[in-house]
Structures are given as structure tokens and as C-alpha cells.
Image: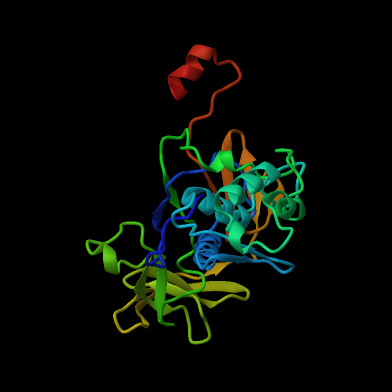
Length: 291
């Protein structure tokens, strides 16, 4: 994932196009933040000095000297490719020597500084199993596409007002420049003390009593933001069991009778109505019922 030149980044899921694309593999930190970090590194290095905790490395104008290679370095160090034999994020020594030989500003090197000595400190390894070889990030992807999408969670945290429901905008907008990745839909709270919202115009079942008899009313979410037009429903005694084959089944219990799926609901047994095959039926009979 080699970074592109800086540009305005929106909050929504946005295709990001890069000059070249790395092979498909796992990364520890492949996201917008790492991509932005790589672009920031390129900006800092463009000032002519790569500042390290223990040394400064003078370089030529990296915007003109091997810019793609510098972008590959910045991106590889930020997204941190994973490998079973390596836990570090260090480019290979031969790549380090190559890029500093071409783009290091030798006139500003300190006495005794050479690309080889600098890279001996920065990238002493040249085994592709334990370092990051840049050639993998300098060739076009075999997948035939150079577009990457960022996975985001538009409704977490919730950007909508307290009386609205956040929904992911999956349809997009006519005005793509001002398109948000979420929609704020008016809703109603389930009750005065409830934080749960239902969408406007939805009909919901609200319990009015639960012990021992369960009673409900069906309400609709009105434009006022409150539940309205409530209609009481018949109450149910959930303490009443179902008697099936001489056995007691509690309310809410699922079970099978012959080939039927059954459910005990407030003392009444409710079962599926499909026709069962007897043991004497042949395969042809089974196909007659099942196709």
C-alpha cells in the first residue's frame, strides 16, 4: 500500500488509489491512520533530512530522487507486513544501501558516514524471511486492481441526535462530495426510561404486565417521537404449561413431535403443519414430497 500524494480525505468509506499495490498478505496496521502516517513521513523526509533518535540522515530531494521507492519505504514501515518468522518492520539491508547510494546527500554526510555504515545500524538483515524487501511494493498487483477500500463503522460512535436512529448509508448519494456514510432516521424510545429506539412508522409490541400473566399492547412510532395509537392485546398466562405425551413443557420450550417442530406458547402447543413420511415410504415417495 504505497501512499499517494496528500489530498482531502472524507470520513466515509472511500476508495483510495495508489501508484502501485502490494501483494495480498496480512498487515498489522493497514488503515487510513497508517496511510496518513506514511504521507506525513514523506512530507518530513522531503525537507532534506531523515531524523532518527540516534542519527540524522541527509538526503537529496526525495520528490525527484526515487519517489516511488521512498513511498514504499514509508508505507511498509507504517502498515507493518506480517511474517511468521519476523516480528519487526525493517527494510532489507540491500534496499537500504541502494536507496541511500542513489539519494543520500553525501556532501552533508558526517565524517565516516557511508550508505553501508548507516544501513548496518538501521537494517543489518538482508534475509527476506526476516526483513521487508521493497521489490514486493514496487510492482503492480496481480489482482488487476489498484483500488483499496477502508473498512469503517459509521454508527460507532453514534453521530446522530438522541431521538434518531443511526443507519449505515448503503445506497450512497447523488451529491458524492457531501455524502455521509450514515443516515439519521427519526425514532421513538420504547419507554420513558428506555434508551432503545424504534424507527418512525414502525409497529412494536410493548409489554404492560409480565408477572404472572403477560400482557402487551401494539403501538406505532409517530412523528411526534412518541409511541401512539396503542391497542391492547389479549393477555397470556406464561406460567401455564403444555402437556405433550404426558409430559409438561414450560412456556417457550421447543420440541419435536414425529417430524414436526413444536413450541409451547402460554399453555398451547403450536406445531409445524408439514406432512410427515411414514417408515414404509420409498425414495420415490420422498421425492414426491421434497422434489
